[in-house]
Length: 260
Image 1 (tube, rainbow, N blue to C red):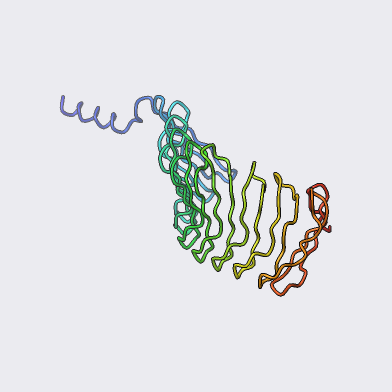
Image 2 (cartoon, one colour; image 1 turned 45 degrees about the horizontal axis):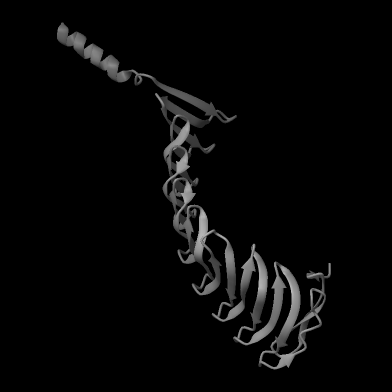
């Protein structure tokens, strides 16, 4: 008799819900499950679904804050993103993916802020952008690339996360333009180039405003008329490789007046 009673009690215990565990559900208008929140003590797990029943996300929580891994999925079942949280803040590697399953962005976090090398990828896996963060601020050299894996741009940042200089490149590897930055604006002497490496123009800027057109050239390096821009007013003339005028800009108080 004791054996039978023990067996019945054991079956009842195993078939009962865990002590203190609660489950809450919400539904789409069609009756399909939208969210399931399972809570035990101060820890929870939230699972959300697409209308067709596929899992969209799985999230661990503690004291109603994200704590643990958050994983989101595309409808094809591949991961969309993966983030680890500690007390509501991202910690460790944050990863985003293309629907194909290829990595899209990888970014480490420390104390909730981006910290370390961030890499963005093209869908085929080639690097699109890479650079470093320090406590949420971009620092040092940030590079972007063409899909052909050739360098597209370099941005330099100081220790405070302020961009200080910029270089853009043609896809053939030659420089397109280069100069310094102040408060994210062009500042100081900027040089512009043809895709054969020959300088096409030199312009002085002051915090995003054009000050003086210093020089202009054709694709063979022959000097051309740079225009009348001086002290923020006048014209800037741009030329093609064969010396043809491609654009004449009127500048008033440092601002180029483009035709509507």
